[in-house]
Length: 289
Image (cartoon, rainbow, N blue to C red):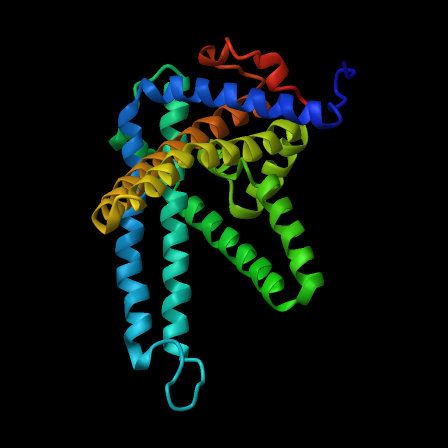
């Protein structure tokens, strides 16, 4: 057994962390199950994002023959502006509804009874801060993507490392914004500080939830494979079922991740362990580093 404060090393330690993350996901679901209406928040986020795509992306592809001029082959500036603006709006929408989920989860963990309305109201109260964080995250992400795409092999490797590091240190950014009401730069500093305290669980959460998502969508792959053996009609029906199923998985995982982030924030910031997580070996799962 490693000494207190010393991270487990090796494959067994990693497996243990991911196993604990799965347990935490189960407890997150127990919290979410008490307020299933909060699952509508990711749905509303998706609908709002689709509207934004229709408003910005479709015109970008249609204006003056699309992204490039058919005669000169040059990039169409107006189309690029629309694409960038649309991408930023979609990013803002995602952050806003993530903030609403965090507010709802924190309200439940505090003994309240959150609703979709109360969660949205909570996020609206932090709207300027949330939008500021969304812009900063969007700009940093864009710079990293540009580095990966245009920097050759070195840029691709450096960009991948930078992206992973950024995602790790900002994992608790939205809870920080929602609960501490900090601006973008202070949010990064605070989230980084909290990351240092629970870095192991932070990494395990992102790996663990990614693994859960992968496993969860496997039935959809099986359905499509079986449908393909039934001809074109069977395949079409299988694809429809698979798309609906995957959408449900994404909605659920988004909500579970927000609950987990909120719980991890509360433990890292306040040392508070919610009663709903009392059966998940919380002392081992959330161990300050």
